[in-house]
Length: 358
Image (cartoon, rainbow, N blue to C red; front, side, top):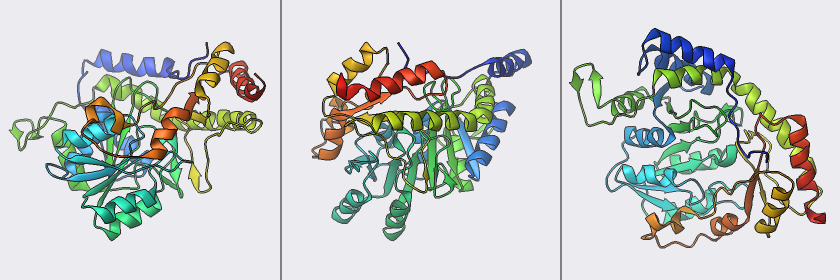
């Protein structure tokens, strides 16, 4: 079976980890600081703060921006649950707006309807599957209503919007380095921002509220990244451009196959550079498509089979979000990762292309 995800970790990462292990400096330290600087430079942000995972990065970003008790944050219901959970961890309330049926990202028109209807304090946009959200319209909306704009870029390393990297488009952003992501540290995350004060608050928050070795200015968590993870991340960051180019090349081949079918493939709009964390198609008979691909030896994944507002942890939410609900019944992701060899890529493409005749 061809796996739907496969991390690309090799000898360079092993050598970097070995060097850290031999140094004896395994926890937060110079290796992490170097990774932060390099990641900020890559994204084009003024500052970066490393964290233990993508969820803690999002929690830290929201906290550092001042999101807290009683605040309300508009976000998407069609994402991994951590997006909304991070808002709740801050004591704030997620308010769900529906998504665009083509991009699967927040629909700016739906966000505007929410903002006009009820008070909110921030917008949290997710760059789902590696496709940047409509940040121009969201930025204008945020500016017009004096709202914070935050990016959940957990799936979008290497994606760009109007020539700018995701992670530098809002007031702050959060990335994940989980093994299935476009680059990995095993587990890990990163906050990016141009605001020095936000970066300082985030750095304190992830390190017990410390401002120096013996002074704890505020409550904080132990959300630190290890030096071992940072060493992997520094190598992966260097390799990120080749990873994204491979994903995009694979996606173009899959686009050719999908074009011959009734399936709806992922968009790649002008002015946007899709990073293809997932290659996600839509089908009105997903179970049949899953069986067809499984018979061909192609692994698949459903991201996500239940919108956040329909999760048991959100049973207090009374919302009708028909686009997200429909997408949850139709989406299916297939392998697009850089570890695919030519034969595996052709197997996936042939299986997709032959679906209508199965």
